[in-house]
Image: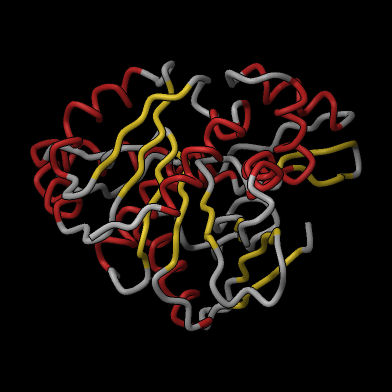
Length: 284
Protein backbone atom coordinates (compact mmCIF):
# COMPACT_ATOMS: atom_id res chain seq x y z
CA UNK A 1 0.00 0.00 0.00
CA UNK A 2 1.39 3.47 -0.87
CA UNK A 3 2.58 5.32 2.25
CA UNK A 4 1.35 8.75 3.31
CA UNK A 5 2.52 11.27 5.89
CA UNK A 6 0.84 14.45 7.09
CA UNK A 7 2.49 17.22 9.12
CA UNK A 8 0.17 19.01 11.51
CA UNK A 9 0.70 22.66 12.52
CA UNK A 10 1.96 21.44 15.91
CA UNK A 11 4.87 19.70 14.16
CA UNK A 12 3.42 16.25 14.84
CA UNK A 13 3.58 13.96 11.82
CA UNK A 14 0.95 11.27 11.25
CA UNK A 15 1.93 8.40 8.98
CA UNK A 16 -0.17 5.76 7.30
CA UNK A 17 -1.05 4.18 3.97
CA UNK A 18 -3.89 4.34 1.49
CA UNK A 19 -5.61 1.82 -0.72
CA UNK A 20 -7.30 2.97 -3.89
CA UNK A 21 -6.80 5.69 -6.43
CA UNK A 22 -4.98 8.91 -5.53
CA UNK A 23 -5.46 11.73 -4.81
CA UNK A 24 -7.31 11.13 -1.58
CA UNK A 25 -9.93 13.83 -1.82
CA UNK A 26 -12.61 11.89 0.07
CA UNK A 27 -11.01 8.95 1.89
CA UNK A 28 -12.61 6.39 4.15
CA UNK A 29 -10.63 7.18 7.29
CA UNK A 30 -9.53 4.19 9.41
CA UNK A 31 -8.45 4.57 13.05
CA UNK A 32 -6.87 1.62 14.86
CA UNK A 33 -6.98 0.45 18.46
CA UNK A 34 -4.61 0.94 21.39
CA UNK A 35 -1.08 -0.38 20.70
CA UNK A 36 -2.10 -1.47 17.18
CA UNK A 37 -1.26 0.40 13.97
CA UNK A 38 -2.54 1.11 10.47
CA UNK A 39 -1.81 -2.46 9.35
CA UNK A 40 -4.78 -3.70 11.36
CA UNK A 41 -6.85 -2.52 8.37
CA UNK A 42 -4.88 -4.38 5.68
CA UNK A 43 -7.25 -7.39 5.56
CA UNK A 44 -10.25 -5.04 5.32
CA UNK A 45 -8.61 -3.08 2.49
CA UNK A 46 -8.01 -6.32 0.60
CA UNK A 47 -11.68 -7.25 1.09
CA UNK A 48 -12.94 -3.82 -0.06
CA UNK A 49 -10.60 -2.90 -2.96
CA UNK A 50 -13.17 -0.50 -4.41
CA UNK A 51 -13.00 1.85 -1.41
CA UNK A 52 -10.31 4.53 -0.90
CA UNK A 53 -9.23 3.49 2.59
CA UNK A 54 -6.78 5.75 4.43
CA UNK A 55 -5.36 4.00 7.49
CA UNK A 56 -3.41 6.18 9.90
CA UNK A 57 -1.05 5.42 12.76
CA UNK A 58 -2.27 7.44 15.72
CA UNK A 59 0.34 9.51 17.56
CA UNK A 60 2.81 7.32 19.44
CA UNK A 61 1.98 4.28 17.30
CA UNK A 62 3.54 2.73 14.21
CA UNK A 63 5.42 5.21 12.02
CA UNK A 64 3.74 8.34 13.41
CA UNK A 65 5.65 10.72 15.67
CA UNK A 66 5.63 10.32 19.42
CA UNK A 67 4.35 13.25 21.41
CA UNK A 68 7.00 15.48 22.99
CA UNK A 69 8.90 14.32 26.06
CA UNK A 70 6.76 16.42 28.40
CA UNK A 71 3.44 15.35 26.86
CA UNK A 72 1.15 12.39 27.53
CA UNK A 73 -1.54 10.55 25.62
CA UNK A 74 -5.15 11.62 26.09
CA UNK A 75 -8.08 10.36 24.06
CA UNK A 76 -9.19 13.94 23.39
CA UNK A 77 -5.78 14.79 21.91
CA UNK A 78 -6.22 12.03 19.32
CA UNK A 79 -9.55 13.62 18.44
CA UNK A 80 -7.83 17.00 18.08
CA UNK A 81 -5.15 15.48 15.81
CA UNK A 82 -7.72 13.96 13.46
CA UNK A 83 -9.98 17.02 13.45
CA UNK A 84 -6.98 19.24 12.63
CA UNK A 85 -5.91 16.88 9.84
CA UNK A 86 -9.40 16.84 8.30
CA UNK A 87 -9.66 20.62 8.38
CA UNK A 88 -6.13 20.98 7.01
CA UNK A 89 -6.93 18.66 4.08
CA UNK A 90 -10.42 20.16 3.66
CA UNK A 91 -12.08 16.77 4.14
CA UNK A 92 -15.75 16.84 5.06
CA UNK A 93 -18.59 14.34 5.38
CA UNK A 94 -16.22 11.38 5.62
CA UNK A 95 -16.91 7.79 6.45
CA UNK A 96 -14.79 6.93 9.50
CA UNK A 97 -14.06 3.38 10.60
CA UNK A 98 -12.73 2.95 14.11
CA UNK A 99 -11.62 -0.19 15.94
CA UNK A 100 -11.63 -0.34 19.74
CA UNK A 101 -9.93 2.86 21.00
CA UNK A 102 -10.04 4.20 17.44
CA UNK A 103 -13.82 3.82 17.59
CA UNK A 104 -13.91 6.01 20.69
CA UNK A 105 -11.80 8.64 18.94
CA UNK A 106 -14.11 8.47 15.92
CA UNK A 107 -17.21 8.73 18.11
CA UNK A 108 -16.04 11.92 19.84
CA UNK A 109 -14.87 13.33 16.49
CA UNK A 110 -18.27 12.71 14.88
CA UNK A 111 -20.13 14.17 17.86
CA UNK A 112 -17.92 17.26 18.15
CA UNK A 113 -17.42 17.90 14.42
CA UNK A 114 -20.57 16.60 12.69
CA UNK A 115 -19.57 18.38 9.47
CA UNK A 116 -16.56 16.05 9.19
CA UNK A 117 -18.33 12.69 9.53
CA UNK A 118 -21.31 11.48 7.50
CA UNK A 119 -21.19 7.81 8.50
CA UNK A 120 -19.48 6.05 11.37
CA UNK A 121 -18.44 2.39 11.54
CA UNK A 122 -17.43 1.02 14.94
CA UNK A 123 -15.61 -2.30 15.19
CA UNK A 124 -15.95 -3.95 18.61
CA UNK A 125 -16.24 -0.50 20.11
CA UNK A 126 -19.29 1.02 21.74
CA UNK A 127 -19.49 3.83 24.25
CA UNK A 128 -16.53 5.49 25.96
CA UNK A 129 -14.27 4.59 28.86
CA UNK A 130 -15.33 6.64 31.86
CA UNK A 131 -14.33 7.36 35.45
CA UNK A 132 -16.90 8.05 38.14
CA UNK A 133 -16.69 11.64 39.38
CA UNK A 134 -16.02 10.51 42.95
CA UNK A 135 -12.97 8.54 41.70
CA UNK A 136 -11.27 11.60 40.17
CA UNK A 137 -8.65 12.01 42.91
CA UNK A 138 -7.85 8.30 42.89
CA UNK A 139 -7.50 8.32 39.10
CA UNK A 140 -5.12 11.30 39.25
CA UNK A 141 -3.02 9.58 41.91
CA UNK A 142 -2.71 6.42 39.80
CA UNK A 143 -1.77 8.50 36.77
CA UNK A 144 1.03 10.39 38.53
CA UNK A 145 2.51 7.20 39.97
CA UNK A 146 2.25 5.55 36.57
CA UNK A 147 4.15 8.43 34.96
CA UNK A 148 6.93 8.17 37.53
CA UNK A 149 7.29 4.45 36.86
CA UNK A 150 7.23 4.94 33.12
CA UNK A 151 10.62 6.68 33.13
CA UNK A 152 12.23 3.55 34.57
CA UNK A 153 10.91 1.16 31.92
CA UNK A 154 12.84 -0.12 28.92
CA UNK A 155 11.47 -1.57 25.70
CA UNK A 156 11.68 -5.34 25.32
CA UNK A 157 14.18 -6.45 22.68
CA UNK A 158 13.45 -9.36 20.31
CA UNK A 159 16.01 -11.21 18.21
CA UNK A 160 13.62 -11.39 15.24
CA UNK A 161 10.30 -10.08 13.96
CA UNK A 162 8.92 -13.59 14.31
CA UNK A 163 9.64 -13.59 18.05
CA UNK A 164 8.06 -10.16 18.42
CA UNK A 165 4.99 -11.39 16.54
CA UNK A 166 4.80 -14.48 18.76
CA UNK A 167 4.86 -12.25 21.85
CA UNK A 168 2.08 -10.09 20.34
CA UNK A 169 -0.01 -13.15 19.56
CA UNK A 170 0.19 -14.37 23.15
CA UNK A 171 -1.57 -11.18 24.26
CA UNK A 172 -4.32 -11.43 21.64
CA UNK A 173 -7.03 -13.65 20.20
CA UNK A 174 -5.68 -14.10 16.67
CA UNK A 175 -3.16 -16.29 14.87
CA UNK A 176 0.53 -15.69 14.22
CA UNK A 177 0.00 -14.49 10.64
CA UNK A 178 -2.35 -11.75 11.90
CA UNK A 179 0.12 -10.80 14.63
CA UNK A 180 2.86 -10.52 12.02
CA UNK A 181 0.86 -7.91 10.06
CA UNK A 182 0.89 -5.64 13.11
CA UNK A 183 4.50 -6.50 13.95
CA UNK A 184 5.89 -5.64 10.51
CA UNK A 185 4.69 -2.05 10.85
CA UNK A 186 4.87 -1.81 14.62
CA UNK A 187 8.51 -2.88 15.12
CA UNK A 188 11.80 -1.19 14.29
CA UNK A 189 15.33 -2.65 14.07
CA UNK A 190 17.70 -1.95 16.96
CA UNK A 191 21.34 -2.72 17.67
CA UNK A 192 20.35 -6.03 19.24
CA UNK A 193 17.33 -7.02 17.14
CA UNK A 194 13.87 -5.46 17.09
CA UNK A 195 11.63 -3.53 19.47
CA UNK A 196 8.16 -2.04 19.24
CA UNK A 197 7.96 1.50 17.88
CA UNK A 198 5.06 2.43 20.19
CA UNK A 199 5.81 5.05 22.82
CA UNK A 200 6.18 3.49 26.26
CA UNK A 201 4.05 6.32 27.65
CA UNK A 202 1.03 4.79 25.92
CA UNK A 203 0.90 2.32 28.81
CA UNK A 204 0.56 5.02 31.45
CA UNK A 205 -2.68 5.32 33.38
CA UNK A 206 -4.75 8.17 31.95
CA UNK A 207 -5.04 11.20 34.20
CA UNK A 208 -8.36 12.27 32.71
CA UNK A 209 -11.48 10.49 31.50
CA UNK A 210 -15.03 11.65 30.90
CA UNK A 211 -17.61 10.94 33.54
CA UNK A 212 -20.46 8.62 32.61
CA UNK A 213 -22.83 11.61 32.38
CA UNK A 214 -20.47 13.36 29.94
CA UNK A 215 -20.05 10.20 27.87
CA UNK A 216 -23.82 9.74 27.53
CA UNK A 217 -24.13 13.39 26.46
CA UNK A 218 -21.39 13.09 23.83
CA UNK A 219 -22.92 9.99 22.25
CA UNK A 220 -26.41 11.50 22.23
CA UNK A 221 -24.96 14.40 20.23
CA UNK A 222 -24.14 12.18 17.25
CA UNK A 223 -25.85 13.31 14.06
CA UNK A 224 -24.67 10.56 11.69
CA UNK A 225 -25.82 6.95 11.28
CA UNK A 226 -23.64 4.43 13.09
CA UNK A 227 -22.90 0.80 12.25
CA UNK A 228 -21.42 -1.20 15.14
CA UNK A 229 -19.87 -4.54 14.22
CA UNK A 230 -19.48 -6.31 17.53
CA UNK A 231 -17.61 -9.52 18.17
CA UNK A 232 -19.48 -12.54 19.45
CA UNK A 233 -16.47 -12.93 21.75
CA UNK A 234 -16.19 -9.31 22.93
CA UNK A 235 -14.36 -8.80 26.23
CA UNK A 236 -16.58 -8.44 29.29
CA UNK A 237 -16.02 -4.67 29.54
CA UNK A 238 -17.31 -4.20 26.00
CA UNK A 239 -20.40 -6.27 26.80
CA UNK A 240 -21.04 -3.96 29.74
CA UNK A 241 -20.55 -0.92 27.50
CA UNK A 242 -23.18 -2.24 25.06
CA UNK A 243 -25.76 -2.35 27.84
CA UNK A 244 -24.61 0.99 29.20
CA UNK A 245 -24.52 3.06 26.00
CA UNK A 246 -26.48 1.36 23.23
CA UNK A 247 -29.66 3.36 23.85
CA UNK A 248 -27.76 6.67 23.57
CA UNK A 249 -27.00 6.40 19.84
CA UNK A 250 -29.66 8.30 17.85
CA UNK A 251 -29.08 6.12 14.74
CA UNK A 252 -27.46 2.79 15.57
CA UNK A 253 -27.38 -0.52 13.75
CA UNK A 254 -25.65 -3.13 15.90
CA UNK A 255 -24.61 -6.43 14.32
CA UNK A 256 -22.82 -9.34 15.96
CA UNK A 257 -20.14 -10.89 13.77
CA UNK A 258 -17.92 -13.95 14.20
CA UNK A 259 -14.40 -13.52 15.48
CA UNK A 260 -12.68 -11.99 18.46
CA UNK A 261 -11.80 -8.42 19.30
CA UNK A 262 -9.86 -8.01 16.02
CA UNK A 263 -12.69 -9.38 13.88
CA UNK A 264 -11.90 -6.90 11.09
CA UNK A 265 -8.59 -8.73 10.68
CA UNK A 266 -9.63 -12.35 11.22
CA UNK A 267 -13.07 -12.10 9.54
CA UNK A 268 -12.47 -9.23 7.14
CA UNK A 269 -14.82 -10.59 4.47
CA UNK A 270 -17.81 -10.62 6.82
CA UNK A 271 -17.04 -7.11 8.08
CA UNK A 272 -16.48 -5.81 4.55
CA UNK A 273 -19.85 -7.13 3.42
CA UNK A 274 -21.67 -5.34 6.24
CA UNK A 275 -19.71 -2.11 5.75
CA UNK A 276 -20.34 -2.13 2.01
CA UNK A 277 -24.08 -2.57 2.56
CA UNK A 278 -24.14 0.19 5.19
CA UNK A 279 -22.33 2.67 2.94
CA UNK A 280 -24.70 2.00 0.04
CA UNK A 281 -27.82 2.53 2.14
CA UNK A 282 -29.48 5.93 2.18
CA UNK A 283 -30.01 7.32 5.68
CA UNK A 284 -32.14 10.27 6.69
